[in-house]
Image (cartoon, rainbow, N blue to C red):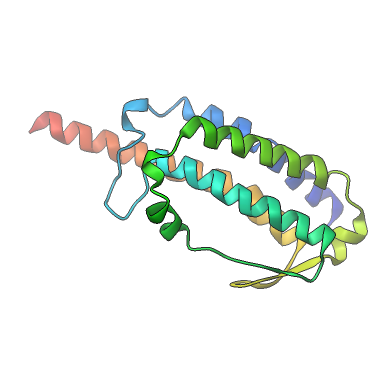
Length: 167
């Protein structure tokens, strides 16, 4: 990954919380628990997932730096959502957790050496050997992916609401 591309990804990564909060303005609170299908996540569940994912990301980031070559574990996000009963967890706490974890990782990655960017790896239990650049790309894309998911929920909710009004 060239340094210019890396710097753009880092800046985008650092703006994720603000992007997420801005996106929330589109979603009426009354639809945050609504699910487009039983196996799909509500906006509420997506927010809780984002915090859990960021907690995993936080640890992975530090392993690259402190213990390069070490192992990191994947997790089954659907099992977490079900077993941790995401629908009842606190959104405000989860958003604050995401904000703080993302800021801490951002503040750290803007200081690391080119050597770490170029050579540090971890062994992911599901994805195999990962570079620091791959980690950054995955987590830089994570919030935009979920914003698009929440927008799809909004569109489905609007259709559902229209259908109910016509019935």
